[in-house]
Image (tube, rainbow, N blue to C red; front, side, top):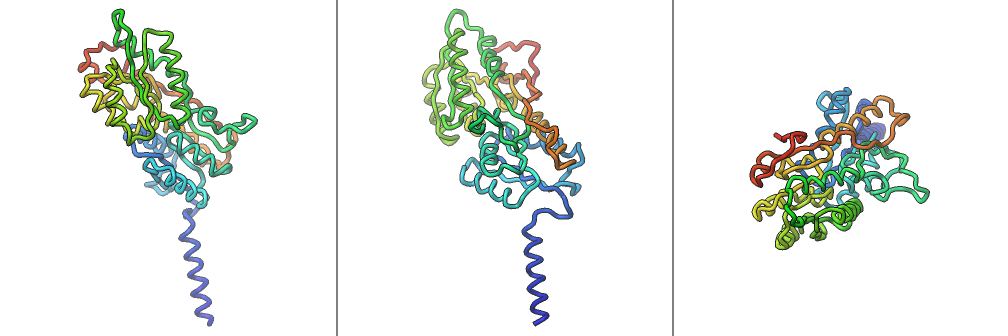
Length: 322
């Protein structure tokens, strides 16, 4: 009986230890990615590099980073966040808007360090009194830079008297995307530009919607900050290049994938900025002095191959991507 009792106690101890992701007090980070994307993935690299610089390395056993990707599926995303919350990870790292919003819906106590996400008002996460969620940190972005990004098209294509026709696609269910479209409509009304805009439900619709847009004789395509656009950018750029339509964007990382030019946040630096905040929290386990910040690093970049293809002369204040 005593032996059976000891075995039962031992089995319970093993079970409890196996359910606890923390070992030897090593901090645990639950990293939540909403979808798979090469460009957005640069933010994750920046985040982990910032942690390493501050002494938190998974390879050296000073931090445990549990990475999970929802593959653009909302139910899966909810399950991932629920799992991390139940495990009581030390902090959540959220990449792209859907991950951040889901995390803020599931917990009010575990700090969420966000990247590739808009400011709280554009995520619709403010309280009824206008307060920001108390556990929201990291690096966020507003839409002020969109003006510069969009106006680049007019400056580089330089139409002679004719009005440019610029095409866009966007996911209507993403608040920041709808806001961006409305802002661009206001910009277009003030300049020599007309717009062709089509909605899509998700990245799976990108091929059909992009081809439909290209049939409207657009002069250029503008890839605005939209998670569905990010996830389907390779499809977009392929179809636009086949139709001989240059692509411009507000996201510097998309230029490396074939867009002509952009003014926008550097994805790596975006993640790095959020990672520095996360490292500060891990050193003290206190949020004193921490608050979400605006993105600090934005760049004017261009793709030399794309510029050559479309015979576009780029100003010297643009940096060529490698």
